[in-house]
Amino acid sequence: MLISVIIPAYNSEKTLEQCLKSVLSQTEINFEVIVVDNNSTDKTKEIINHFCKIDKRVRYVFEPKKGRGAARNAGIKLAKGKIIAMTDSDCIVPNNWLKEITKPIVFENEKAVMGGDKEIISNFWTKNIQKKHDELFKKYLNGKYINMIDTKNFAIKTEELRKIMFDPELHSSIDLDFYIRARKKIKIRFLNNIKVLHYHRTKLFKIALRNFEQGIAAVKIYKKYKYDKSLLEIDVFNSLKFKNYITFPLWIFLKFFKIPFQQALFNLFYEGSWRLGSLCGFLFIKYPSKNHL
Image (cartoon, rainbow, N blue to C red; front, top):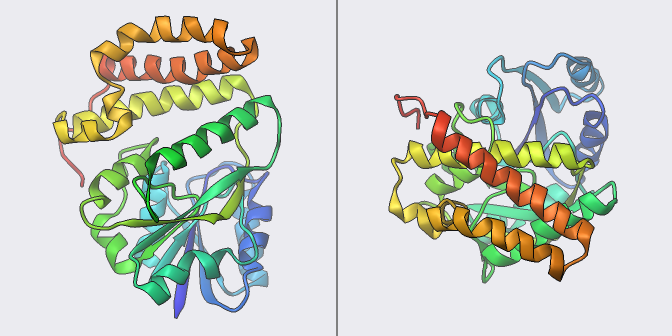
C-alpha cells in the first residue's frame, strides 16, 4: 500500500533538509513525499529540487496562495496513496514514524491517527510551550482517542481527508477549523509513544505573536460558523465568553503571587497575546462572505 507524506514548506531553508532526511529514512514501507513550496523567498525550492534529484520518491509542488491550508490542499489533490501522513517542515520524525502512525489505519481500520511532539531546542520558553502541549493532549484525551487534531504528526485515510479538506482562507489555526468539520465524521486515534521532534519558538516575542495570530483566527473561525453554540464544547471557543475577558486580569495578577515570576511572565504573554488577538478579531476581522468549505 502506498502512503503519501505531505509537507508544506514556507521559507524553511533552516529546517527542511533535516526534516526530509528523517522522512526518507523510513523503512519497511512504500511511500511518496510531496513537498509543497508555499511561495517561499529563500532557498526552500532549491532544497526540495535537490532531494527530487537524489530520491525519486520526492515530488515538488508549488502553491502560490500562502497559508498551510492552501498548501496542504495542493498536496492532497496530487497524493497517490490510500493513506496521507502529514508533518511540518520544522519537524524531525523518528525512523519508525510512518510505519507506526499508519498501523492503526492499516490493521485496525481506524480512519485517522495522531501522535505527539517533543521540543528540539530546550530553553525556559520552549519547555513551557512543551508543557502547554502536553497539558492540552491530556485534557483532550478520550480513552484511546483524542478530541483535537495536530497535523504535524497525523495520518488519515485519503478518501476521508478529501471529503473534508482544509480552509485556504485561514492562515492560522487551520487544524482547529479542520477538527470542527472532521469531529462529526471521524474519530482520531492518539498514539502518545509516536512523537516528532519540533522546533518550538525560542523567543518570547515570537511566541506571543503566534498566539496573537491564533486569537484572531479563533474569532475568525467562530464568525465563519456564525457563532454556532455547539462550538462552545471546545475550550478555545468557550474562552471567548465575555466573562473570561473580565476575570483574566485578576487571574494573571494572582499568578505572580502563586508561581515563580518568570513562569507568571510566560503566562501573561502566552495567554494575554491570545486574548488581545481575539479582541482584535471581534473588532476588526471578517470571514469572507462566501463560505469556502
